[in-house]
Image (cartoon, rainbow, N blue to C red; front, side, top):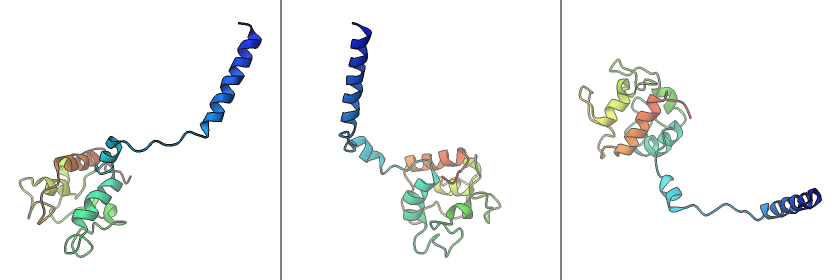
Length: 142
């Protein structure tokens, strides 16, 4: 094949690829994508949306009437690096096992009061694992 023929062939392929690009659309979410939408990720925004807003920052609990306020917009500043009444940081970045709120949700021995969330079933193991991973990874405001 001559260089001229190769050149024409490459131009043809380039035109073909570019003309098809406008017809490419996003695929419909798969079953796996839909299942992952409900998972709590090891990110603060996911924990706020799927745990704190639904199980903690509710009427009669930590919605501003009881310390710490876990309402959206202020929860991060109210728990990360903040010392609780136990004398322990509520969230100790990088160390879930020394974070009092983590110990409360796992129902560790030595905590004061009930396991959280109070009056509800304990959080599922995968949610607790995500919270632990978020704390152990530095408890970033992400």
